Length: 237
Length: 237
DNA sequence: AAACAATTTTGCTGTTTTGACAAAATGAGG
DNA sequence: CCTCATTTTGTCAAAACAGCAAAATTGTTT
Image 1 (cartoon, each protein chain N blue to C red):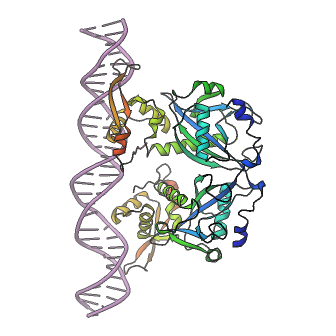
Image 2 (image 1 turned 135 degrees about the vertical axis):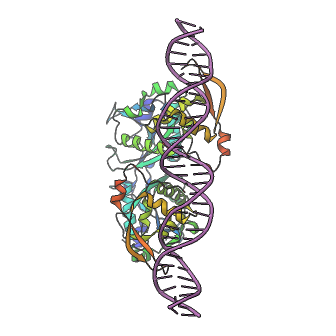
């Protein structure tokens, strides 16, 4: 292959070499116990009725990120959600109907805040990430990648709070990280660690629903976090 | 948008909504001082003659990874190279000629081993990653992303060795990490840290080119590394 | 009113890791 | 044998980590 070959073909590709671009979203939620993902039943053949990630096709005038945002809004009614690209999946026959390349994004939402209407409308359902049914195509693979990325990201950035309500207890926060990392953490060490980061605001309110003594509620304090600039959020598993 | 709308359009998209898929490679090398990237002069309009990443278009029957491997082989003559996906870039007008979405991969090669012929043939040239010229389209952005990914990855996996010859000195290894992380490291602490990982084989040979005393050569020992399974390679900056 | 129950809250301590720091060893060249 | 540039090696204090248990709170029961 010569320099010319390589270069002259760049803009002369046949339409046939263009492919469909999809975006699939791994929507994570947390319900005080388990890390969950939102799945929908596929409405068409092939694989009709099977569980699938929420997704859609890229439109002409939008970026992948815009498409992911649109899909997220469509299925949950939420916007301004934390999202991160996971990877792009391109196995030639990953979609049996037509060649489609799909970029996966994961998103973190507060499971209590999304639109129940939409979830019902789309036959969507929350599953424990660890006990989800077999998904269509390479979606299981996407979930695995997304989990890895989420785990990696939570060690350097305080994104876990996106999965919790605005006010939460230390115990909930700990359970969240235990769910994400699939590990057990020591209560005392966890609390000490979180406190040393100095990114939470301790409220006067208590959550009285889980114990007689009640446990203090905390808020993630963006300002405090910003003031730690340089000192990054770092948590070891 | 109803469930049906969302789903029935999936396979009825017009050709017009398909797009070209490109792969661009950030090829990293190291020359005992600087982290380098391999760039080529673009051969066609627009932006003809400007510096660009090496890249190409995805073929019908290949995955993105296969395309990246092919491109890498085309420009360097090398195969079996460490590669990692960086991200997929999809700004609508990133390519002024036609909508093209590009997935970036970075690759790590031993700068001494690639084909000089091919580099000459393609008018390719090595630049310090920190002093590279302005690149076409969003390629500067891609390089930045690739650098971040490389930095992140080197903290958890011993991939730096792919940038060095088979035998190297501790000083070279240190300079490499200093280049990647753009930081200064303490000689003693660095060597202690590396030794504590127990993944190198110390050879009897010395490199006599840089000092009278000479410095011992080391080899990365894959077996030793495997035996550390679980204990991951972790380096702090 | 006292005892109880369930959960939250709070240090302490030994060990490991980190990071700052300087002197001795080597061997070619003069 | 001295010089010299570079490599090689070790100590120590501070911080981070990980393992561990008792006290406090408050609604409920007796």
